[in-house]
Amino acid sequence: MVTVIDAKGHILGRLSSIVAERILDGEEIVILNAEGVIITGPKEMVFAQFKEKVDRGQIRKGPYYPRRADLLLKRTIRGMIPWTTTSGREAYRRIHVFVGCPEQFNDVEKQTIEEATRLRTGKFTTLGAVAKFLGSNVR
Image (cartoon, rainbow, N blue to C red; front, side, top):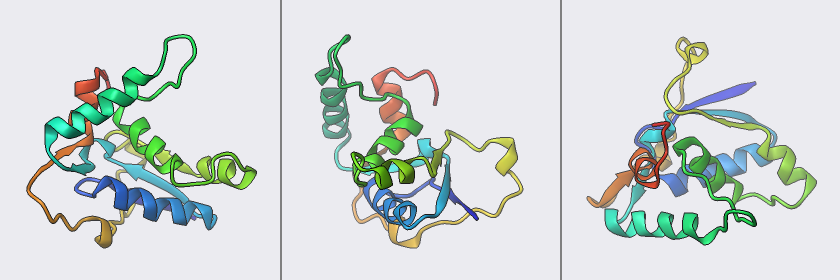
């Protein structure tokens, strides 16, 4: 069984932690509209943090940090699972993230996670804006 989640308006950390728990339990999850995920905090601070992560890597040695919105969300989820173990790698393969909504998921019923949609501050930016700032061509 595949669970399809529409991520538009969800908060990044809360969505990621809930999805990480579910994929570790064996559920396969598809996340749509990754560019609409919200990151709380002042925009300049969020941009500076992501820019520092991208600039930390060296061209030949890494670490290679993603710039696209879907890969940024997937990397956040990866940080919440035991990536170095076999069960963590198998769980990571059960997550699929897309920018926008592919045609194959147009008619599918999409879930929203209520715990991840409550915004308590007025200062936020979207993952799509961060991806654009980092130089991604996919928005």
